[in-house]
Length: 284
Image 1: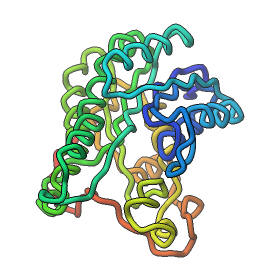
Image 2: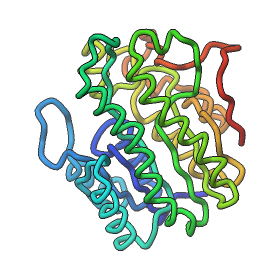
Image 3: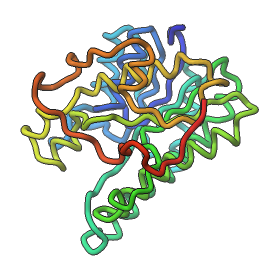
């Protein structure tokens, strides 16, 4: 299967993992709605919706840059309508936009708490809700949330409870909607990296260049996501995927090309459960 002429609605696609997924789909000739807030350059963050659009076009796709805050219901409705008017429908939704604050209870201002829950949880729910009527008309519709497996080990909550709950809400929505829309044939899955990924969050939150060397490139998530999109939606839903497992199922086991610094020990990501952990297990 191919993503040629398929339309992807990707939140947070101006940089990082969202852009990597968009670029991988663009190489198949896909249409990409770039749904993100950054319309003007930000000295703290690379890329805008317009630089992303240029990259997508160079990669072989068609791009529609849409300045949109996914907390704004009318803004999301407008972005969905523009996407459908431009490309004729929506085949894939990628809920990638997210906010992070690795802070404990006493160190988390309510403004930051609200931001994480409004973007991660509410934004994912809102974007999914507005896209579902269009996905129901697609031939192989997929929704992919960039969120972790539901491992309820308290160690993931104790150090940053507000962030963990915000990310887990994305996973719970995919888990619930997979069952809710099973008879419609719309796939809802989650994808999470085994290791840290070299993004602005790592650069700005987790320790700069030395931490970046212990990461994999966002391209591993792009390749894994597009492998999922090419699976039959009716038989691939309700899963909590890990990037390298997806690639291994497609016969890709040499992952050295994804390393930022080949040979450097990799940094494990948060939320990846240990063998035998108490997790909610999805089903295909």
